[in-house]
Image (cartoon, rainbow, N blue to C red):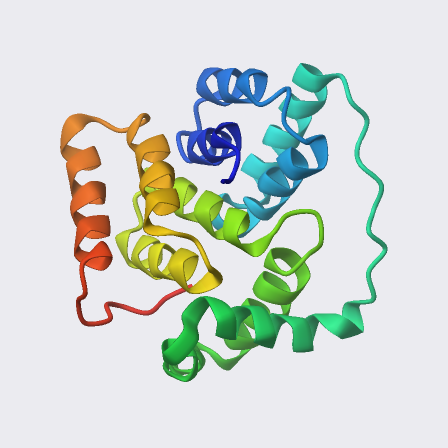
Length: 202
């Protein structure tokens, strides 16, 4: 089972509230520090570099830890790894996703696969199930239903159980008002029950 503190930390990043993020970091202080940093690093794909950098700075302050060493990866491996990871997350919708994103702009397709899934989501340091659950928790708070839909399904495709996704959804709902929380629960409920595939977006 993914660490509940990591799910709450990921969800807190969607609030842009430094007090909420600090509290979530303090609650995650006993978690694997590499896993915490991976949650913070991957957040730049969704909340942008400024918020991710601020979160990393806050983590240095809260944890008192230096940065973990670089994995020193070869960037030439990112294309192939990105294709594999993206295909795992999107399963039967993978080719449709690629076509849809290419229609938006062909460069974005390459950035998504090599940069998003190869460079970041496929990194060592955190398993894919936990990454996807944390992404879903963040996106639920960030209020992007199309992308949330994709990553809720992606969590299942990566190997998460419905109960694990329940936990990620509830971690996010702890940061939402009643109406927004019910919208997120309803979206997940429609996916949890057999239903036609929904919108495709990274």
